Amino acid sequence: MNSRIVIIPTYNEIENIQAIIEKVMSLDPLFDVLIVDDGSPDGTAQAVKQLQVDFPKRIHLIERQGKLGLGTAYIAGFSYCIEMQYDFIFEMDADFSHNPDDLVRLYQTCEQDADMAIGSRYINGVNVVNWPIGRVLMSYFAGFYVRFITGMPIQDATAGFVCYRRKVLETIPLHEIKFIGYAFQVEMKFTTWKYGFKIVEVPIIFTDRTKGESKMSANIFKEAIFGVIQLKVNSFFKRYQRS
Image (cartoon, rainbow, N blue to C red; front, side, top):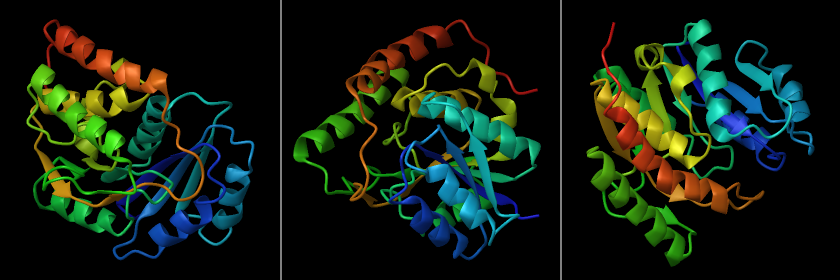
């Protein structure tokens, strides 16, 4: 069985889903795909099922009822991939803001010696395309804020383009991960760091979506701001010890 799988959460990604899956399917080495769809009314899940005809063993689908949040989508995906015994488990957006070609670089980084590889927008300056300057500044200073509060030596803590070794996800008590928006990404990195795993940032170019609608909202941003403080406070009362 292939050792690599890419989890892609979706909600109304009919404009992107076929192209993103076909691109991932074309990579060398091979990557399987797991789509976690939150009941998209636009037919995203149906499009995935059609593609499964050509790749019955490499395209996987979890269908959920309604929008349950990014974090819970990834937790469901992690649990599925652990059960299926994949060794390298990836997070990626469906909208081509993450270049699928960079999956290979993330994999190579983890294959060498990293436990988590992050596709980082800010490890070498600011590498973001098609964002208004206000959003770039907000995202960049959010990274500074996370580093200041948590002490994590990570430039892009909110990044959603990540490779995990399976042992990381088997170690983290996934049922204790609480956040569902962008704070989820910070919580996963913070928890990985607290358990002493090796994290490496890999420079990427992030390109904002050209098709479909962004899922960013004020509530998601608010969760990220206040969730970081909650993470730090809660960490004083937790033991991060590998079994």
